[in-house]
Image (cartoon, rainbow, N blue to C red):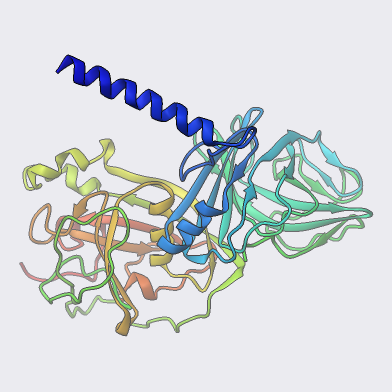
Length: 406
């Protein structure tokens, strides 16, 4: 046995040496796999994007620039014409002003090494070294004799500030300005400005287009007994079985008004606030399926409240699917294409009925629980979306209209 082990070890070394000998000098076979750190040269090979296009998976690539860090996100389902990409980004302090255009105590210059970004729904998250004294930032492109405002984006504030930006056009000089108390647009520090994103009269700044990248489910019914059609599960989870839900009639139930189906426009973006929690489970651990206890996070928060980007025409479901993929959170759903319906079975490996017969996932928008599915709720800029796990058919999460007798 010892002789066999030694022979296998020798064979492994020999094969590794032969493989290296077959490679041409100066040729690197490593390219950044999904979710990894970018290589020093920032190059991600065409084959990585081709694989993501075929599998429709989310690609994530992490990089650093000085004290800043950044993460690229590519929606595989939207990738067209894959090619090698240099995803290296240089982020640096740009002082406190763009002469004649913008003043901010936190002004960051962004330099993209890739000038021909592939066609895809692409976002870039920038993590600042510290907390900024601001709630929003504005993105600008500087051309000779002109500074163009591209978009305004909310900051996420945790241990440090971060912002997520849609990206498709990487040509030019880009600047990110924190809208802190010192922020001004105009030829001087005393120029007027507005914080609501409306156009500011100024000789130096023009408003431009942002560099945006080129069915019923889980209505607030909580749980029920109607059979659910089969469809396609999301990546990440296969365990658990579900039942579709129907909404019980109630005098307090809000008027059903399913939004009209809207065309999606990847050139136009907005921001909403998203959170996911299962806090109610903490009060009913005795009911919880014993095999699921390890999936209940401390404090019950699966995804803390954050500002997230969406594209015009997208639904609550679209954002949930993308953000769980981006953040490595397990999520499973069933799709019924004939009814344009997607039903959420489980998130973070917590499924309906895991904490009693009246348990399951529900969604809330702006303090109300819609009585139609998440795949049919079209988002508006500023919407606040909360996904909550209920153990009592919605009563324990504030769904006042979804009341029925036990």
